[in-house]
Amino acid sequence: MTNKPRVFVTRAIHSEALAKLAAEAEVEVWPEAYPPSKEVLLAKMGSVNGLLTMLTDPIDEQVIARGTPALKVIAQLAVGYDNIDVAAATRHGIPVGHTPGVLTETTADFAWALLMAAARRVGEAEREVRSGLWQPWGPDVLTGLDVYGKTLGIVGLGRIGKAVARRARGFSMKVLYNSPTRDLDAEQELDVEYVTLERLLAQSDFVSLHLYYSAEAHHLLNRTAFEQMKPNAVLVNTARGAIVDPEALTWALQTRRIAAAGIDVFDPEPIPANHPLLQLENVVITPHIASAGKETRQKMAMMSVENILAGLKGAPIPYCANPQVYEPRGT
Image (cartoon, rainbow, N blue to C red; front, side):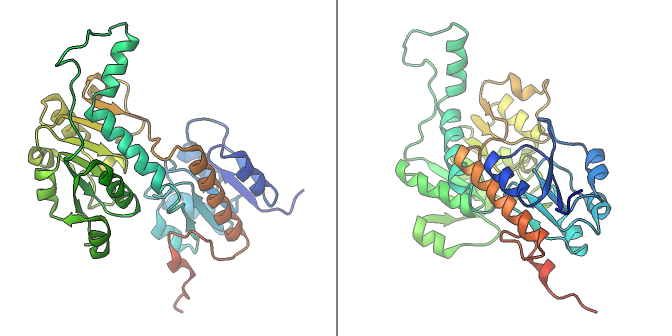
């Protein structure tokens, strides 16, 4: 028998982080590549003191309630945590951790990778070469869109949005942004202009999404939004899939209402194998890997373990999504 607290980890994480956790807790790691089902999560709850989750895990009130009173902390290996009912966790007195800041530069790099790949038809060209087709050089062969000197619209000027804006300087781009709140300091530092979403869509050659998912952001990019965009515009999404209406995106790309898209997230994930988007040449699709730099993922794992260990000891967790859980409760 062991007196160590018990922790369930919903996917294998970096070995050093796992060793650090195992030194102070009895750890069970879900061994499969696909996430555990809600039924599995419910079965684990009630006997664990810590839960280290991924953004694909459905941590709703039922799961959280099943875990109490044994469950002391939930730590998500991600910046976002819309898969977790944070309000329910707070009601049950359970702190929820996440990994803010660490993946900013990595995700901004990848947003630019998608932007460039979609603009210059990299995926299409690479597929042609692999299939044995190398067209003779010609003035119109695989011509794409120029990026230098164009207008970039950033929806959501948080850490990642700002990092994307900084990179735009190297391309001498005009940068427009829209966010729930205006950021005057960022406007001075980054030479970006605050505009309405409608104006951003109408004037931008490239639109990159970097806002948190919320009920208000659900299908923010719908058919009406795509109709407002330039016909030569490119959409990039490294935020959350549900921000974009998938049917509207498919329509916009099929009809060439917009020129192209680079998407790392989709609704649902994984994208269904028979989805019509997969048949289109003017879209670059990657499987939610914008933060998948090795060093970044290692740091995320360590931050998650730090959150778990602090929570197990009853100490305030260092990267907390619901700090109000530590506020004194009314009597």
